[in-house]
Length: 348
Ligand code: SF4
Image (cartoon, rainbow, N blue to C red):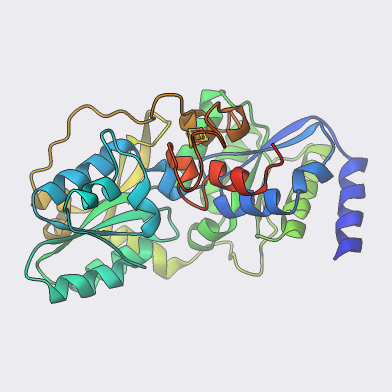
């Protein structure tokens, strides 16, 4: 393994040039930080983290919606990480401390089991990218009980990439595409970025060699004057993705626009439940009104971190007031959050 990484690093050095590569995956950031991958790369080869943490990308408005539902007496079920993500006026953990019934589940199936046992309304707050959306869709298709519904916070990666490329804020030249998301969506959704914006892209796996290989493959494309989508993670990602999963997602979800934390409204970037399944859509089932929302607490630069234009170490609150045990912003809450990862591995 050491020999292989040495070989890759030396090949990278041979064709190195100034380039800014963005990845959009919490697991990629974890590997990069844990194994010091950035320190192996030439200074001119920059790898920046984008919006790769699905929990962090959920905007305050959607947390506020859940808190409002909890106040109406609905049982809220969601992943553990979501509990401490800040809404505009507190988190779901705060709502629970105030007496709301907020429960941690390991998946949508768990939430349905809870609904079957309870004589009250149960809402599953469904966060996650294309990787987790198929399980939510399958559960809705399998006929959950009447007292169960979903508040969909599922988000799609390619529209966020398009936004980042077109905004020009990050000035990215290349993309390392997320392995997990790509197992579902395949290679095709990324193709327009190479064709229309001349962006080399490589879908990568999750060990340090995968990342080094992806960087090398990107530099090789640039060296050859190419811009295309390559698949370094062939052991898991098929070019067409998972067609079965795509089918259930298409059946249950429609694509709509909504804001992401740190981003304005991104067109066609969110999955909402189709009208045919509106009885399982919490936004249709309940009257949810939330006031104006505030996405980032004072001093927190999570938005800039999520857009890849700032590092956690640039935040004045990092490792001071903001830590994983006492997180101020969303990026410090989840173990996939860039600030949380930096807290654990950065020497800053
Ligand atoms: Fe926000 Fe904390 Fe990250 Fe600063 S360190 S950007 S306050 S989450």
